[in-house]
Image (cartoon, rainbow, N blue to C red; front, side, top):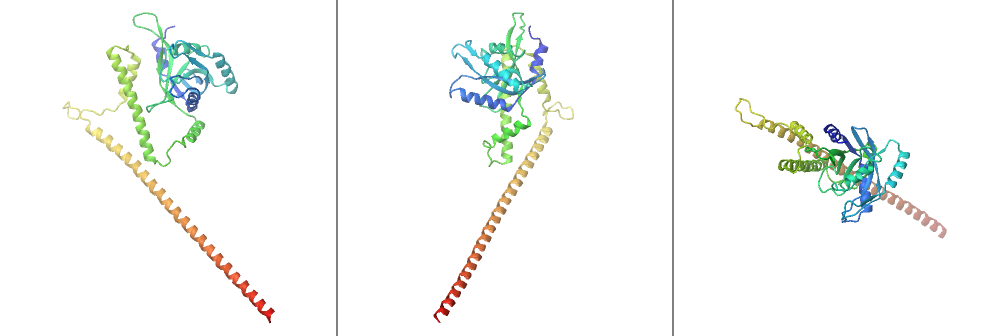
Length: 338
């Protein structure tokens, strides 16, 4: 059956959350299987829950997969292995069900629709997650897709295609503890809180810039006629633009000119105040840490000096005892001679 606009909107608006364990498993699968420098990809199965509104990907496992580099229509996926592993995972945790599959991409390929049809044996609407194992830019390294039947405006035969749905990385409490433990070896301990926050803000801005470039490229293709107009996407873009602050509000007096200087100045002042508070707090924290370090060194020095004094005192006492022994021995020898 062709997918209606309402069904497409239902797929696009689903909340897809991916656990960090899935990312670690996919990267480990890629590093163990693929030779460095090869353009091959790895394929695996996604486990979790899909209630029609929220999709939670909580676990995964690798699958034997081969494909021809020259002919993308020639590929092999061991579905018997998929069925056996799915049955074993069901015995361990019955709540986790087979909800889709993943591959290392980094983009969609011609054979993805055929592979997606194979996974319809196990779930009605399988989820495809492309995991970028070598992210070159900041942002979420996952892209989630659902397959739909696209209805064409000219009334011709419908065609299968993928529709993109937003995805986020979300961890439970136990996973957060594990991820924090793994990041201890990666994180720079010498970096302060201020530098860490600035680095995270820069990465976030880089990810936002990447998404804005993708939106601009898409709109340019729609304007040039290379892509059809999608009213659902344009509606979401309009909602995004409506949430932006109006920095060019008209001035009072009805002059018709736009300024927005006061609003921009107010936002700049507020931002500067927040950054100043962060800077001062980091500076005070660094001074306190430096003071504790100096105090610790002073205490250690005093402790060593006390130890040296005790050693000297013990040494003098031993000398006195030795002197007394020698005097007693000298007196005894003198008495013997008499």
